[in-house]
Image (cartoon, rainbow, N blue to C red; front, side, top):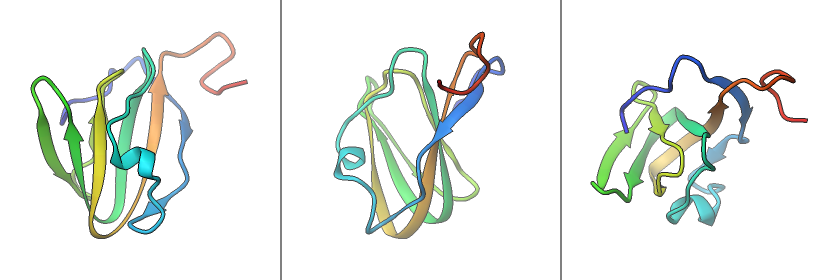
Amino acid sequence: MIGRIPESMVAYRRTPEFTEHSVPDALRRNHSTKAGVWGLIHVLEGSLLYRVAGPPAEEVLLSKEQPGVIEPEALHAVEPRGAVRFYVEFWREPTEDGPHDG
């Protein structure tokens, strides 16, 4: 989970910024990205507990200095640790139309 997104990937979408008050319940429960889609959790302020269901199950405290890498289809959840501000950026292989949807 502290891995790296493969160099061939391109960023194509990101979520709005979330705080401890606005993080959707769906992100607090186990969920996953689609096949071939990686995620990168960027913490702008505070800290966020990132859990991967596994196997093996893992937890890491994310911060401005420690982003979180989400592997494709890995079940994961986040939990704010006090005041936090973050967003998630999504990455995939480039398409013929370029890195963006639509």
